[in-house]
Image 1 (cartoon, protein in one colour):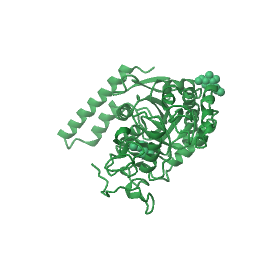
Image 2 (tube, rainbow, N blue to C red; image 1 turned 135 degrees about the vertical axis):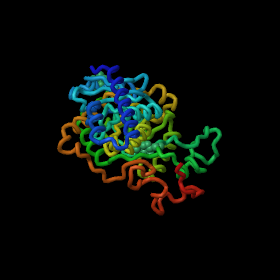
Image 3 (cartoon, helix red, strand yellow; image 1 turned 180 degrees about the horizontal axis):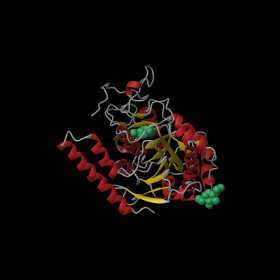
Image 4 (spheres, helix red, strand yellow; image 1 turned 60 degrees about the vertical axis):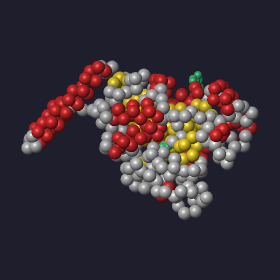
Length: 409
Ligand SMILES: *[C@@H]1O[C@H](CO)[C@@H](O)[C@H](O)[C@H]1NC(C)=O
Ligand SMILES: *[C@@H]1O[C@H](CO)[C@@H](O)[C@H](O)[C@H]1NC(C)=O
């Protein structure tokens, strides 16, 4: 086990050396370059260079990786300043080729934990692949509990105005309205920048192929819950056995449940991604994690084309016919165990695939042929979502009454 206090101390001493180096250079503009290089070289340890960094959100999602026999990610503990106060340790294999961080639940915890991890200087993350491994609410139109999903789009669906349904205009189907708009179906006229992220689809396809090698876990109580969805034609997918599927994820701190909100956020996902995104899971962290990784990419410490989001279905986002929304939220949790199991069962195959293909494929990177990045195009390229990207004739009649340019504060 790495001595954590030592690690902390090491970071602060590097920081102090860098700070003093900064002042020396400032005060002494003609200082020979060779002297500054050796100053750094003498004081700087080689950072750990993970090939895969697993991101868990809380204890169960972390601990399930203890069952993986292919590698022991708990071989060393790593502390970093600004980690979650309740999940303060990151972990790595003895080679540090695979590491794991637990960010904490919800958007704020996830963003801050990842941002501080990136700025810790403990890791060289330039070539690191990121595997978000978590459970999620699942849409029975597309999948079921225990299924393993891989997202291309992550959409922050609740970043909207909100009415209580009792106060909303009669013609609205749900109480959410995109910022700057007057109608739930109008494209947001104001965007904050975290509404939509698009990930490397070629990498996603490789991850899906790896995950399909796994024999997914299932339990009889999950099967019993699932079977209830078979009575609805719309929810046929909810009654099928667990599988590996490609579909998109919605982020919201607001843990929503029920047909009305689930349908509202299905529509928001379609709307925000100009019809490309297919909402199938709901969770509370991914856009926050992605925003922190995007900031890291802008600082050249992260490669944004090396991110995989794996979310397994732990519970349904809406009830089966004949059941109540409250029962769905509070009691229909029979899919939780296989969902947790399958994070490591399917995710372990993804990690293994990346490690085994490192030299041939992954070290140099998987070229993205789709747009990769956020709604602003901060990393370059043009998003295939966002108001400007809507082709003529698409979303007819669903666009804002006001056609202001999207404001970018
Ligand atoms: C969150 O990220 C997903 C996946 O990258 C993206 O599709 C989605 O639009 C994002 N949502 C928000 C509100 O940022
Ligand atoms: C699935 O996981 C549970 C523990 O959550 C375990 O008891 C069960 O044996 C596993 N089933 C299969 C088919 O692997």
